[in-house]
Figure 1: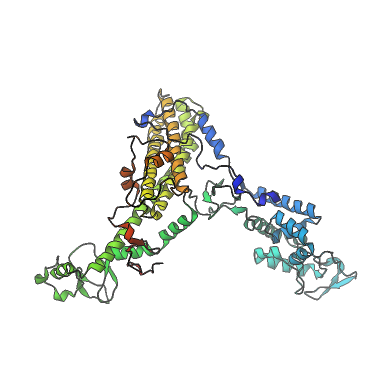
Figure 2: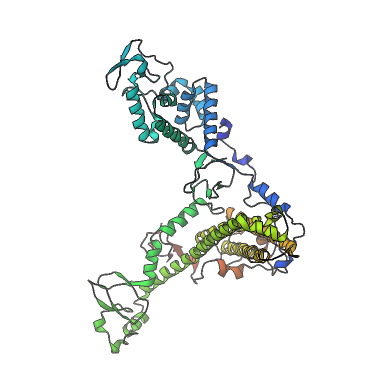
Length: 589
């Protein structure tokens, strides 16, 4: 890799809009789905979209590419520094395969670099004797069977082979192999490995060397998909971290999780941890169970009367409502389905604290479930869309070409529509993680976010409906359809409109919804901010924030958000006066 490639000025990088093509504003008219202005759309639009997508800020490397780039770097260092390829390889391994760093360090202090990496300035020759004593087995061997690193310490071929084989079988540490002499730090280069090791060990060493080139280099990473052997070289400071490997897996270069733009890596990390943590289990227990008054084990009651018997060995019988011993209950206390003691104590406020904790846990659980279910539903829809796209590419497109008497090149607008659906499902999925962590008290931002999310989701559903249901009509036709060109215009137009919706959504979330000013109460976003970000109106010509908030936002709990704080551990809402979470006892920071 060129030395100039090691640093890139982020300010000079080109604008990398994740979604391409189309105008900045929305193309929808006020009259409905069928009245979009699609007259100028044709099959050339998909070509423009593809050309934009090919403007990548990364390169996918196969095994051959890795070998070639590694060899080019070794040759470059060898030529510039006038050293052997084996020595150049040792230098690059020690400096994480950074050509520029090797050059800088070498020309700054060559003697120090040689000492650090184990490259003596002069090659020490073997003793000029007929027989030489091996430093490991102490056998006297003919001089021709002895070998030594640059330091000149002689060892027989058998001992060298065993030493190298053991190091290679121990793992990648063999790449930093030094002379067997305990007092010597001279490096054992690849030339000695190739000369002394057997074929199996040489193959292992070569694999370790290629892995080192990818794993130690800050500009390259392996694709994290299971079984994928591709690597990715990334242009640092170029904006988006999203990478699409040749194996079809998309991931984030920064955190190596699934691609999640426009949500930042910190939010994704918190969301994934929350999905796998035990905090929601605890919230569920708090919301849906009560502890046995005797052994304190949580008990769930899902039906039946108020007479509860704990499981063995406890077997304590108590009232579900007041948690008092059942022996003190009967017809005089309300029978099996009521408890007069509980009702009177409740009116006196005896159960306020426990009931409040249960209610808060239940609200917290409901809120999390709301967002998680929609996150998971979009993930499921995306997987199905990927399957539909695969089936379309495998045989359905060819079938449609035969039925409609049109070449497959004229049907690429269908593939583009499905690619857009797959990508939009991914974005929509992660917006629910974003919404979960959006502060409750920022009402204007939340309302603006829910409006954008609702518009994008509505546009995506129209596109998905058209690409899935309406396309099926033409696949089942027996002869060319007269209105197929109308379908082409509609689908291409919906693809463009949906792309614009999601461009606006992505742009707004990446800027932190900065188009919305701060609000002090339950205010709404201004028309100017909405107009600026959307570039158009909804079908009714009015702001749809109020109609979409219930659809894509969290459930409304009627709590004064200015007097609560949310627990970092279990996300339960707590009153401002509480110093510890009332659900999990986690201290408030």
